[in-house]
Image (cartoon, rainbow, N blue to C red; front, side, top):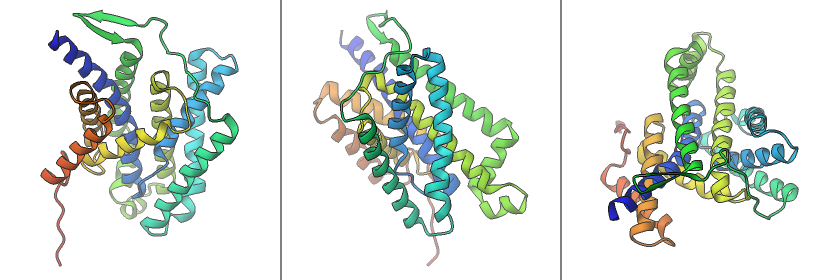
Length: 292
């Protein structure tokens, strides 16, 4: 029985960690492309969930509502790039960081004014509750989260490793000046990164909303865990963001099951502190030293 319960907790931890991994990927992509931490990344999840809810309220089929929400998040990411990042692109790190923080506060208050403070349910993609395998209940929404996350990771790997667009995006993230000399439209690549990052955040919000409800603050805690995942995996490392997200999700669920539910968030960040002490550069990060 104890093995079955632990397998159940592991399954839930992997699903929850997948959400953190998607948002963490958005963090990392923008860090690599624009050299800035986007503190509104968690709010992308909130906006995506509300857009999905609005599309379903317009009596669209679920698949059409999903496509509309994803396309809208892509446009939203482009507008975010134009309004928040682009005007400050030649400034130092701090003004852009403060700009994203201000955008986060603005988005939360705008959503509050438009949609209200009442949390709302979002229906699951699949009609059935789930399946039992060897005594472990596999919730249908958790299965959807795992499958979609795996598909996103595979899609991203294909784009980055086997397409010209992916090569241009990687070149932009590694050295913007050299990319310009090679004729790569750096501003366009950064805009595409923001669009993709917004879509990833919106997707995470849509996937987790049937479990957590759609609310103004749903993205804030997700963003904190996702940001912790980027640090655990290695700041700015794509593979580290995925592994870090899964690690945080598993630690959180096992801590809730074996220790205490109210303090599950504290134990997740305690593990982050341990990682920082033992391996400050993260699991996949590299040590960087500078001469005095």
